[in-house]
Amino acid sequence: MLADECQISPLIDSLHRAFRKPRPGRRRGIGPVRSPAKRIGLLASLVRKYVRIMVHFWRVPAITHFAPAMGWLALLVFALPAFGYLLVMLLARPPPPAIFAAPYGLFAVAWYLAAFLVMTPLWGLPPLWRAAVAAVIAHLVALVAPVSSGMARYPLYVIRCGHLPVVGTTFAAAYSYTVPASREYMVTPFHEHFFCSSEEAAAAGFHEFP
Image 1: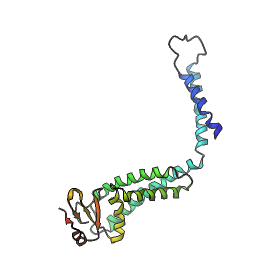
Image 2 (image 1 turned 90 degrees about the horizontal axis):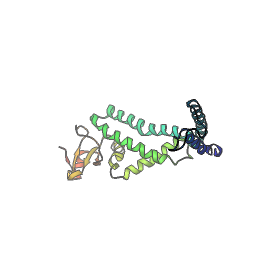
Image 3 (image 1 turned 90 degrees about the vertical axis):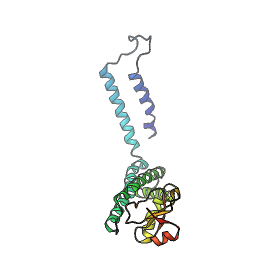
Image 4 (image 1 turned 135 degrees about the vertical axis):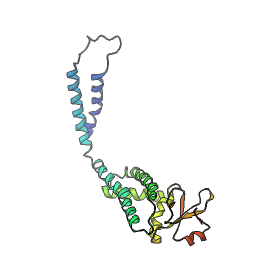
């Protein structure tokens, strides 16, 4: 690996010498003149050396496990939540409006990017465990982050209530809530309060929207 890495600097120097333009005032007759065919041959040899170095580099276990870990992470962050959303649409009565999925799509993208950053330094774990640990850590952070707290806690309330919860917001001192049958039912960064029933929301000082 070290010997291959030592070839990178000579490759750059050779490429620079092969394609640099002559300095002003230097006569073209001095020094070797490379024809286009020779330059193409030199470039091809440099590419072959570069490919050999990169092939050796990608054989490092930490690198070879990274692509499968990205696939597992996409499965955990995108595929499984999408499957859960389809189950909610099929089984929930009444089902939530289709616009309900739009904010959660953005949340899933942010979740994936955060988990990707967490996953990068976890070299020693197998791909599946590496992706799972990163996804869990990113989700735990989302539970306490002000912007994503409500969206991260919503699935927990679905499990707790056994059905879609009532969603409340205090944004702009509204203190309003929406029920699953409402067309305005959705979860955004501004919805941070959840209740298992309308009575529970009313007891907490919320009124139904609109």
